[in-house]
Length: 426
Image: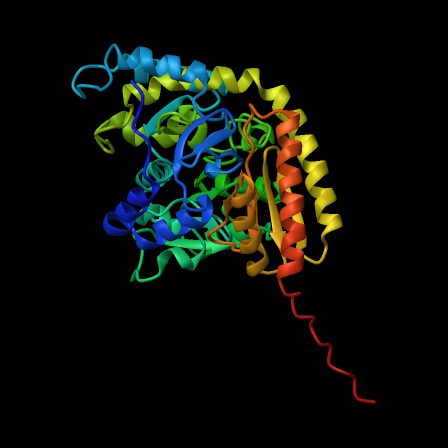
């Protein structure tokens, strides 16, 4: 039985009336009046029949859309037991937890499952505060950790806190270029945890300096504070490694995972952590619980997703080299628009000289058939997040579309103002 044809106008009207007029407006620009209808691999088919490359989706579709191995695992669970009683033991969550811990060499043997990244952040910080009996948390300038109240306190940009009188966690944000920042903040008051993204996603694909992170980890450990690596966007081979922090041999107490953990099919996040950080939950498993935590459909996807990610890891490394070379060349060819190209693996940011140039390019890309992810906290940067299932030809296609969009933007975007140097008085 086929689904009835989508009426895009009706969908936008419902968005305006029941969700948000601004969502309807941005969706209209992105789809040129069409809505998403179906997807497979790197491609999304719109309601008007057009097919577009998806190098966005905010890093969820690392395996593309509807990967057959993940779909098969979820369908098997759907036909068996799609939800949990929450009273009886859940063997699907137990298997997923064991597989996840083994995937990282059992360096961090304990697991908590949530549904989205903010869930994982909230739980990790809560555990750190309970385990240490301390309140303060250190986060990083440019970091993004979610928008629920506790996670929002760790998120650096004030744009996400407009209208709020405060957040629930005592947080200080430090400069990622300052190796002495954690030691200095610890001296100023008791600290429960240090939280960082090894590669900041929402801040425009910014890898943090490993020597600084190593020093922070050491200073935190000396003080008895926990170190939490938020790899919800950059982990699971998105940036080349299973875990960026563990691959760099950073002594972290937790790695937070999400986005592609459910294979791009179902929502799933996880806190992967040490025995010490998990101790409050081991003592009282109801210290933090959620109705859909460890949901069987989501947990069934995890082993399949991890398996496919590893099968494609070498291919992903080759795609990353191709993309880095191509984007660097585009930056050199369009210096009047592009200020910097940065990233790691399959997480790249093109930083424009003005927000207007970035916005112009995003709109042009959508119309030309390439979906990307803007950075809400850094409006000059556009992210490209190709899936592991992409081909070299699809990378070339995306780069060609971006090149053409840059050429259009160069003709239509005013040049940024040139700073005027004050003349010296003789």
